[in-house]
Structure formats: C-alpha cells, structure tokens
Length: 354
Image 1 (tube, rainbow, N blue to C red):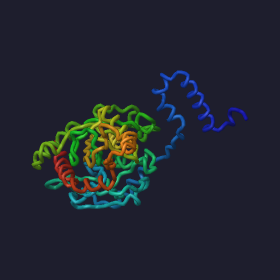
Image 2 (image 1 turned 90 degrees about the vertical axis):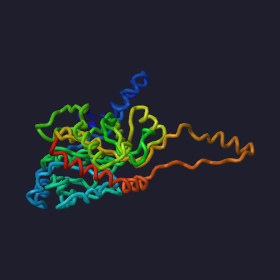
Image 3 (image 1 turned 45 degrees about the vertical axis):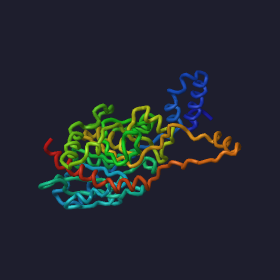
C-alpha cells in the first residue's frame, strides 16, 4: 500500500504513537504535551454550514414586529427557566421549529426561545434561552454556541448568562449569587474550544482577547440592582468560574486542584457561550447561583485504619458518604432562582441607560 493509500486516521494514529514514544524518552517534556497528544487522537471535527438564514426566517414568522429585534439576550441555567414570569407580551418559539437548533436533554432545561418585554415602563425587548446545550449531551461545539450567534444576528447587544454552579471557595454559602469576573476553562486548553474551525463570519477576528470578557458596566448594574432590591451584601459575591466538560461531578482531588488554581465556582456550561458572544462583539455578564458545595474533605477516610480498629475490636462509627446530586442543584435553583430573576429583570431595565 502506497502512502497515498493509507487512510488519514491510520496515519494520524501512527504519527501520534511515534511522537508519544519519543516523548517517553524525555519524561520532563511529557506533561506539557499531554493536551496535544489527547487532541491528536481525537477524530477531526466536521464544520457544516450553519443555516442562519433559515433559522432567522423561522423565528421571524413567529414574532410581531416590535419583538423582532431584541436588545438583550438571556441564557437560563438549570432550574432558572422561570425567568419567563418576568417577561411581558410573551412569544415562545420551540427549538424544534428553528433550523440548526438541537434539543436540550437535561432536567430543568426546556427547549424554546422566549421573546417579549422586560423591565419597567415600555420594557426592553429580550430573547431568553429556556434551556441550553452542553457538549456532554453529545452536541458539537458549533451547536452549543449556535443560539448565541442567532441572538447576535437578531440584534442583541448585551447577553446575560446564568448557571447553577458548585461552590469551590469555602467562603461561598449555598444560595450565593456570584458575579463572574474571570474564568478558568480546562476544556479550552485541551482541544474543546468552541471557536476552533472556520470563522462563521468574515467580520470575525481569528484571535479573541478574553482579559475583558466580562463587562464591568453590566457587572456594576448587578450590585446596583441588589441595593435597590434590598438584598444583604452577603447575597452577592464576585469570583472566577471554572468550566469543566462534565457530566460527572468533581472528585475531591479535582475540586482541590480547581481551588488551588483560583476557581471560586465550577460548572459545565457558560464559557462556550461567553466565547461565542465575545467573538460576535456582544457585551457579556455571567451570574452563577451556588447550588451546592463541591465535596473537598481536608483528609481522606482511611479504610486501612478502620480495618485495623475493627481487627482490634474497637467500635466503628462510619462517616456518611458526601455526594452531590442534580436534584439538589434543581432544588436550590428553584428556591433561590426568584432572586436571580429579579436581579436580571432590574439589570435588563437599566441597560439602555448605560
């Protein structure tokens, strides 16, 4: 078989294996190369044409004229879909009617766009995602961020992204709303960046700076909103969001690693949407509702010591296992989601004045 007859996938695997063998001879070089090795074994992603025109046409057919150009986009996280209660003149467009949209499969997420007015007075036109897409559901990255790109093409200038997150910082109590000022995205560093591939518009820049990803003006509005709503200062905090791929919750070692890396909260969403929004030129604000504390014990339970005590005839009191569940996330989201919704409503109403 000639070189031209060797399948690309096979050639790629052979080259990757040869590269790995070379690195094993120099272990000090191996750690830095791990992401590249992992990427080299991944199948090359496909980048089909996105049906923007068809999607915009489908959405347009559902809306009255005054709602066709929303100013603000909102992404609702787990258990936070009740934002529709704050929207007047509500018009809902199912994802199934929009070309290019997937279906959300996660409990607590619906699958529709909600259009309407929010805020005092005449209101501000908004569009809200009632259910987002995650890579762990099997959606390609282009699908995950596709709704953000549609929002931009509809005319959205500012986007508010919400999520349910696990608390990494021990000073953050469950129920705290964290205004995100930075993020740590391990998947971005290991071949899961949503901006990989061809640009979706000739107006986009190839390299996107993220040191200014989270708008100070929008973040400032959240704290003004909290003051106007009479919330206690401890109800809100600022912090760094760690994005992980999921769908598993973190092990104690992973939680400890993220804490040492500077993360305050951790979740399985948001960052892909932030990146797409910044590429589209949108102003971004992200809010994390701490729905659970990540399990990070100071010490590990010693099975060895337990067995030795058992053999010595000493009484044993086995500690209960600490675990996190999605039900816990949804329960806290439901209990504290109303506060998040009121903050978002106030911010949306104030955006035209900044």
